[in-house]
Image (cartoon, rainbow, N blue to C red; front, side, top):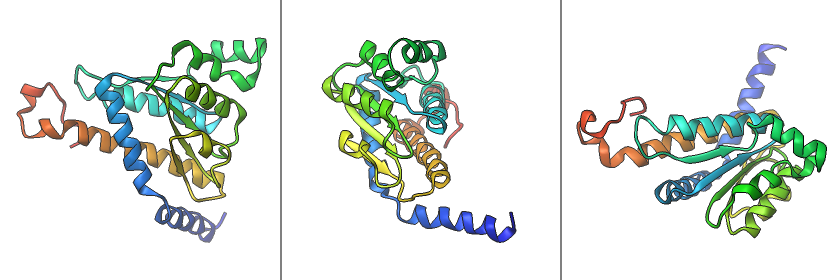
Length: 205
């Protein structure tokens, strides 16, 4: 690969960022803060690179956003229990590996956070249907034209690209943007107080 190829790729990333619907990110932050305030659960799921991001974002919310505080996000990634995923895939259907896990936990007003580059993954769509039937709030992170996911989500962040690598790059960027904003929003009332009085660690501000 030449330097021109590398530059062309990053130029494509930059152009895609310019077309992203940033207001959707702000709305997602608002819903996650509401979940935090009311101690509602957040469930994350996806396949392949999206599975890795589901686990990554669960770590960011559960540990990164904790920042030494006692009150924390209640978050669970359905991609982390490999024995359970393979049990459902083997004994039932791969299309239901997330939906079946969700049935065990989901309650009204919880958040189901789905990640799919294409927006067409059957197991992700089935989990969103279960979440909607249970009265949960549904959030999607996808690309291309949103696939069937966009119609199953209360909020859907669609990366405006047909390049899966660009989509996955920016999915990670979106979750890191969400994390950064969540930390600042949650800590803003505490920033003017001495750190010793808040119990917080000065890591993100």
